[in-house]
Length: 397
Image (cartoon, rainbow, N blue to C red; front, side, top):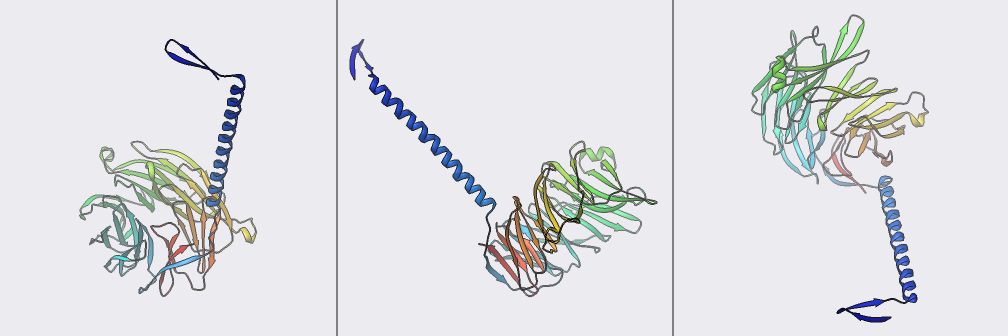
């Protein structure tokens, strides 16, 4: 390569041979980069497919928990552990199955709701209520009428549907047991209450009513606001929708001020705020056997009436906008449907299976001991399975 001096700095002039060599080297580098990118994409795709279609063959007993169990025993995932409760008391297990706190009470037919740092246990068709925070601090009180349903918000605000002598009542209490709201609803004006759902901030409540007019039946979804918007209306009722010839048995708040109502033949999605709007309706052309809802998804098990015995049921999942996420057909008999972050669990008297949102059965097993209850825990791939004589914390391996 020749070198010339000009105006105090150097100028380099490549020969034709050097230029060709440099061009070949650059082309080789380009092919290498393209090959490396393709290889990385293949590895990433294989990793995704391996994760989505991973199958677990073993389940490990992390811990066996000995407890006096009654028929009223139930459990659910809470923070990074599990809440277990019955008519005699409530306790919290961490992710390793260690008991962090334990409280006793006497509440017949207990039903639970939780949000944020608060948990409420109420007696269905009774009057007793226990309010607990995440440290297990407990307050107990009673109400005047039998409790039909209960919900709780993140500030500890409790919403109750009560059955009175001359009608039903919607009542709200704060964490100090102070009554905030009491609204009387009657069958002639509103209908028979089927389900309630409270927003996480405690400001909004949605109620499903069944309205019977002679031989005609319809469902009514009523939206209540307990802030300034509701005060302007006088009775806190800010909106409502009627749906003919269907029964809406479940309503739930989801994230982003979304509400889903589950009828016997459809899912109805609402957007709440200063105004209430109906966003989407998903027609369900099969019999709904079970349903579970969380902040992001709705899971259902449908009966496949026209399918073979190997495809007796269909598990489906929708997101909060009504878009289908997963479908999976199965035949195993089950008694409980659980919805996790990206999975659903189906449990029967002896059967246990886990499906991911790719519709892939990650694990299935028939136990020798009869299963009385199953719950998710605060850790992925860990489940609390209750038998008639003890509780096992299990982990997929």
